[in-house]
Image (cartoon, rainbow, N blue to C red):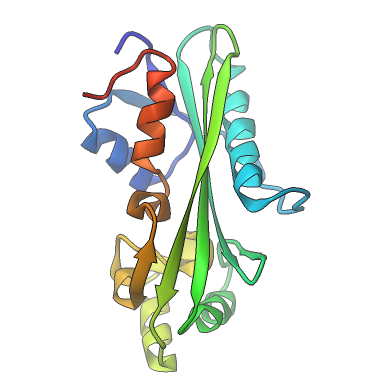
Amino acid sequence: MCKSLILASASPRRQQLLSQLGLKFSVEPSNLDEDLNLKMEFGPYAASLALKKAMAVAKKHQKGLVLGADTIVVLDDKILGKPHTFEEAQEMLTSLSGRWHRVFTGLSLVDASTKRYVSDFEESRVKFKELSSLEIQNYIKTGEPMDKAGAYGIQGKGALFVEKIEGDYYNIVGLPLFTLSKMLAQFDIKVL
């Protein structure tokens, strides 16, 4: 890989997935406040947030390829962000119980030297089993829901709630690898 890759995210899950692909990268979170004022469709919205994050980091560099990503969970056309309290997490998980919801991850790659960029998004659907209030309370006590959109992590104990998925599993984790590989190829970066 000729260009250095910069991940504009502090997400340990995204870091793990990039490492899994054998990509060398540095981490520089954008620390951009996410504006949840939706004025467009969910997929393009997630991609626009990813682009804002990537651009914020790219402005600080003369060279390198910056990867921005943003994952949103949508239930009944409402975005479920990251819960701030035990009560918010409980409310989100209760609302997801026994139902399908959608997960969108927007991705953007920005060449810091030219500001050329590509953006895309992926959508997956997730069906939760019926959750008991005890399961919800015990899951929240693990602390896992508190830094995740929709109050669960499919790659952790939250997997126990997932009855079915349709689409890219890695999208639900927060970094759709198939989509990312297509985007990297546009910058002449071949993962294999």
